[in-house]
Length: 371
Figure 1 (cartoon, helix red, strand yellow):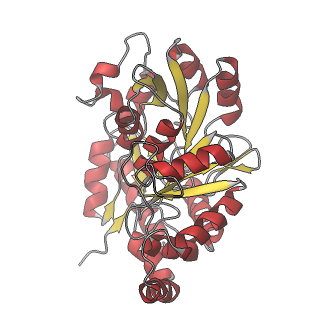
Figure 2 (figure 1 turned 180 degrees about the horizontal axis):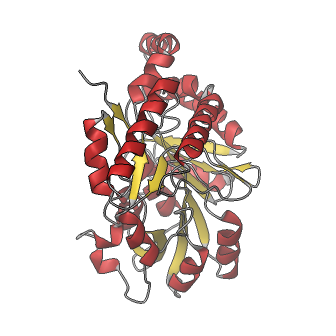
């Protein structure tokens, strides 16, 4: 039987810390506090400290984190939110779910992250928010985006779902935006064993509002002062995340080491390996290469037991649901160029040297055959 190497392996993360995670799960079960108890409160404080922000609010998912953030900023019908098309569907869907209108911007062709010049061209009098998506583990050009936002009096929300621990100018991502959103989906650099998310902020006022929005719009007396549903990070996920947070930096260093090995041994192939932005720490949630003849290469890789991913094969502005938000004047040339050429190689900290070599050898053979 061929050992299949997928682009991610969340079970390997559990196995690596299973003894501590099992004890944490037992601790929650024995506590009889399953919703918004001590584990959530402690994780919120620990992750806020890790990020270097004043507050962190746990919610049900990264998507909910985005929706609640925009609601907290009083996004209204007709308000526009600038988003990259080259991102997870969740980023775009969240804008619509929050009642806003997504406006697509292009990405930088080297780093695949939001292009500040394209953002500037997309701004109208109705623009309210820019969502800066830190993609594949690499930070956006926050310096330029903050300058654009300041010039036009816009708010920045960071989408950090793929960038736990990444840095820009020696600051953790998640510490730049007025609100910053995280996902703890199992495949993330910091992932639980189910859904989970949260919002970082330096605003006590916004933190309190989000805490109300995550639970029926309640105030401290459980009186609904806002119309809202429910979106809570549960005690079990929080307990597991508290364990994994202790190992996040070490896990990221392992990802960076694997990426360095890929860089060195793939350098002679006819493909583009990831470009690091200056003054950033790229934590390689994904290791994404750009190449020609992608589909043929994938077919050969799978026969070798390597199962890569594509993030993302169809740009959001070409999804049937989102086409109506596409503006002809906002050309997304780079996004469309990338979509047919990118490939995510296996990348997770528990990969062995032999497994990394297997990927490299299989890819090298595939690229040469498909020239």
